[in-house]
Image (cartoon, rainbow, N blue to C red; front, side, top):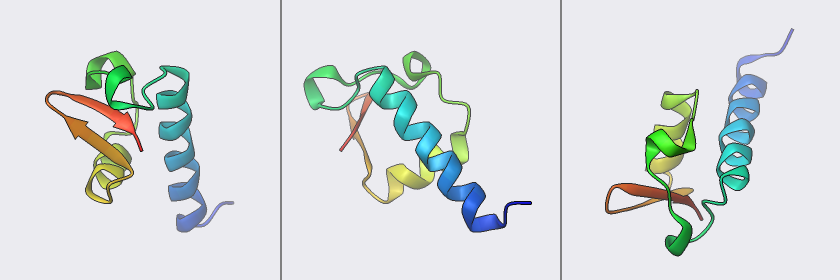
Length: 63
């Protein structure tokens, strides 16, 4: 069974992979939250707070 930190890293990787799949990797290709189809909102918000995900207007991209 995975411990807590492994689960967090797994979810972070899932969010990052979804953003890469959506090509939201630059300000020019930023997508809305709904367009990204992210399942892990808490993980998404934590990555946003840590500046891994950048918000520009109402869109987001992976830095």
